[in-house]
Amino acid sequence: MVLVRFDNVGMRYGLGPEVLHDIAFSLPSGSFHYLTGPSGAGKTSLLRLMFLAQQPSRGTINAFGKDVTSKDRKVLQSLRRRIGVVFQEFRMVSHLSAAENVALPLRIRGMSEPSIREHVREIMAWVGLEHHTEADTATLSGGQQQRVAIARAVISNPDLLLADEPTGNVDDALAERLLYLFEQMHKNGTTVVVATHNRRLIERYPHPVFQLDDGWLKKS
Amino acid sequence: MPKGRLVPLLRFFLRTEVDTTPLGSAFSSERATVILPWVIGVMVYLALLMVSASMSIDNTIARWRADLADRITVVVPPAVEGLGGMPLTESHNSLLSFLRSDVSVSRAEEIPSAKLQLLLEPWLGTAAHVEGLPLPRMIEVDMRKVDSVAIAQLRTRLTENFPQVLLDDHRFWRNRLLAVGRILQGIGLVAMIVALATALVIVALGVQIAMSKHATTIQLLRVMGADDSYITAQFLPAVRRASAIGSLIGLLVFLSTYALLRIVGDGFAPQGMGPQDWQWAMVFFVPLFLFLAALAVLVITIWGRLREAP
Image (cartoon, rainbow over all chains, first blue to last red; front, side, top):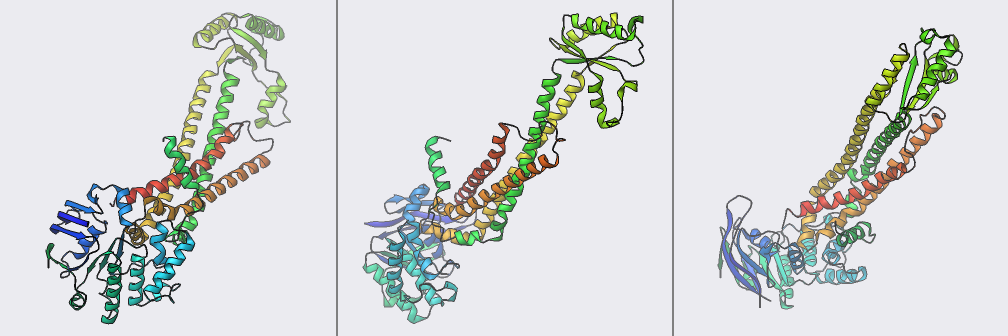
């Protein structure tokens, strides 16, 4: 089953030049893909299209069997709940604790407080931060913040997990540990796309690679 | 708005169990949110003052209309010794009889000197005696129907029989006073609308600024699948509390001002000053309206901003 399909997608910001050209690919359900390419190649833009924060300038995007270029807000909102996103710059909500940050997707879904606490406890243990649940996120290291971000992305058990340079700000040992978490999600049936420059990790955990170059997509 | 949408909207506005974890506490503690109740309070107070002034004018206009609607005054100048060579008392009786027998007149009564003294009291004080003053004698005349033709005909008949007597048609200055009153009333209502609109614009600006300040978090919530209602709910309790407290402050300060004026101006306050009877409903409606309008502005502002993005 195809989870996401891009057909002849082009994208530009406002009236600027096109940053993605004729993008066409399919993501089978349960697959794992890397997205690589030099800085400015369009990786973040492609991920923004995939997590439905942006609309394409042309072409069609089909996610979870629905045409997401229809701009139906309710459809988009319900589809976004099936996607987990790990941002390169973590995007912690600074006035919330680590646990409160992780709990956000469950709160949005209206889950009860006892269930939220139980899920958060489990997921914080899974990423190895069970002793930092009440920590102010500003006091956490970059690696710890990245693990909080991953916990937040996966706590709602998304069908599609997108990660934008999740290993960009961490050392090799931690990068490997983070990728191990993504592998576990993949083994549990989640479709995973990881944007990364790290060739060593790609070789360590080999999966199909989408290569972006100046807005053009090649699959290898 | 159809009833089917109004009820859920009101329920949304008034619900108490709202998850505001992501932004609620941050928004509530911001300086702009803290001063919002006071700004709304001042605007509600000003709006109520304007409403009250407008109502006072309306009451005065209504009284003028009722008192002077069918009334004219016949004035006998003080220099006239006697009308038509008759002795003074006899000539006045003759004038009164003439007026009372006229087909267009329903009532004619001379204004007694005690009432004249009362009218002149603000200028002459209580010690003055009007009997010794060269004042005109005045006769109040209620007409069956007041229009230009009837007054002109009465004036002609009066002039033929009592050439020295003057007829004062109140309509001229009454209409001008009514026009001035209506203009003042209109200015009061416009000022009230401006005060309320200013309060709502401040609410909208406060929410806009907060949304800009927390744009990253809002975007994050949207990426996680938060719908517009969830994001609106982040700001709802703080705006609801600010507009409720502000409306109450404005109302209470206005009621205090009104009570103070009644106490200080006891006996001197003109009749019809401030709201009367059903007009009190308007006084309580203004803060309620602002409370509800602030919530509507909140929703319109947030939904408008959110709809700019997919």
